[in-house]
Image 1 (cartoon, rainbow, N blue to C red):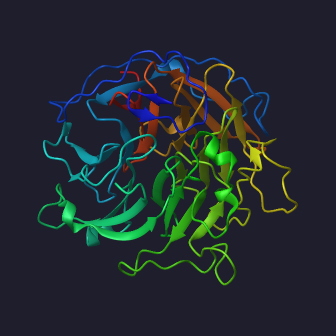
Image 2: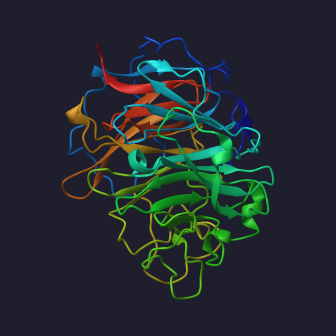
Length: 418
């Protein structure tokens, strides 16, 4: 399904309408917008959550006291919002079509930070899908992108910013770190981030498209990088190495694999305070799922696709073993939900009452939810908002404040009402 030029990451059937249509406005913006739409409660999800408390134990803040404040707009199908961790407070917004823009001092810079649109294949799920900055970016100027090239292969590339021109990068500074031969279009995933251990984590889709995923099981193929989360060491120059505790180091299987059994992980993130990991994986046509791992040393690293969709049997019974991860939350498509968008744990300073809440959404209905772990180990969830425009991603700034990206090019900040 194609909606507003952005290919849905689910395998679902089209829905008739999701409200306002996508628009394309030329960047740069003149200034931040001062529009302040308020939060509105959403409907209850259709599926019973796994391991959830019937009554919240950790209280959810009163949503009537907060808003998703529109701070910028006009981006072309934004896919990533992140920061450089260099103290500059700049926000970097990547667009599906191959450009990265900087928001700084309440302005969007006139010139793109990086423009590789000629290299990027943008149809269906493809495009510029990942962006992250090296933990030592302030010293080495390294950042990494994940995009689909014109040969329809997934590329992880490193770029370097010169000390004299920190707001602009020439495309010819590219150094390829990893290239994955997809073989077929679809399910590219693309999330990248550095973990608390300093290694680069890369989410790769299973390569399937519609019913193609029923004919292969690349997500469980230990000799394929598809349908996996990879973990590599990029601290030693261009030749990446692999941590010794990756799953298949020293035995059969690709050394880069950190976790397997994923369909198209559209958004995973680490809690910057605890190191806990949340992984969203869109379902085929029935179930969306959110997964949780206590930390990077967690040994249970098979997310079960495509034996299971969510916690339900999909193609075949789950093989025996104790290395499988099951969702902490799943929901169905009964009310138009179709593609989960992975979120972020709030660790900002402006709203201490939101500390520890994982905020995520759904593309098709534009719903946003907050989820928190209770003291007894169960989880609670609360609907926060519903947007007419589909949600494409969540991100954070250097302070841990949470932002939301919309298909029509808007960037919104979760903030208290004025």
